[in-house]
Length: 246
Image (cartoon, rainbow, N blue to C red; front, side, top):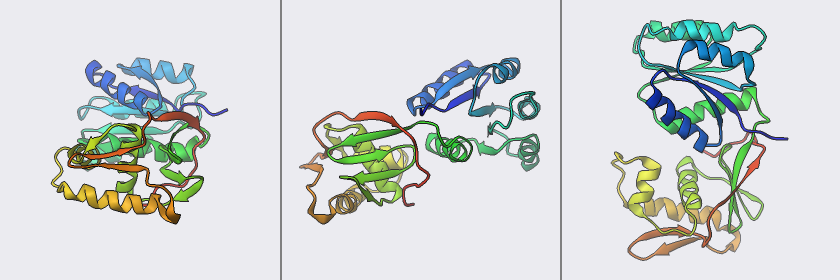
């Protein structure tokens, strides 16, 4: 049976800890939290984990020692470690790698970047963990593995097209303005023009509606776009290793 990936999250700041935990759980992960090093070492010996995420707030805060302790914990076996680092000094980051970190995400970072790093490691170390699939109007999207099908046939999308389609599918039946789509896909601070949304939607339609399939994306004049007329249905699924075209 498939299951959720279990992540142990270390962050000494409780506000940041709760925020990161919420975001990870929204993406389908099971998150155990720890706000002090002793709690980290206790939990890795008591829980079945797939990955440890250590938030390194300040240089010299003991994260390297904690990383080393996780890597050499007795009876745990190999456990992937990602360090979220505020360190700007290359020597400090190299020290984290030497202590056993598998990957380092340097602050400031975006949530999609962190999720991509987590999933890349889990695809190698825990390929049987659960994924998420959304189905709307004959379109099937495997969120975790970046694959899309239309009526059972694979559809190759660019990364931007995949993000637009995901946003529309997660808001199925709701009209979304061009500005909302732009902010969700490129970010609120993006300099991308609004008309770029129309261009990408046109390309997305062309890929989804090949072989004269009905158009699943509705244009709402002078407002924006919507997909389908129902709320998204999400189920668990075992992930595959292929991904969306970049």
